[in-house]
Length: 177
Image (cartoon, rainbow, N blue to C red):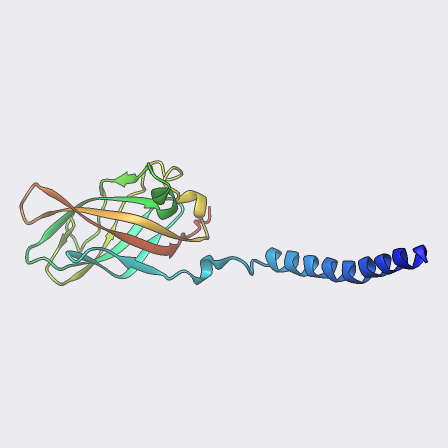
């Protein structure tokens, strides 16, 4: 009689053991195929405050080059003086290292300064940001990530700098050598 109990236990382990093994193999295969990568479901978005809005075109590549299309909602011209960016996860963790760039190269028409007329869209290309590894850009090449961004600007001929804060959700573009 004692053998019957052992036999029942062995039959249980054999039957359900194979089922558990199959489940583990299926889950491992799905994980290998990135089925559980939910970053693809994140929206591609750019939002700033009401003074400056993001246009339809924006991108970030692994070299830290940020391209934005901006709309000026103020009643005066503005001069873009810089940009700060950091991965949102680093920002939320506290004490983030912001990447900063003063736009030494800005392409807006034929002028050398970023002057956006009220209500118009212009492309603003910033030079490569410094220490991009610390702000989470280069480490995320090919991944969809959320970034905190600040666009610094002055209004009209003024010298007082303001910042339009917001977020950018986009896939970090991989740069091929």
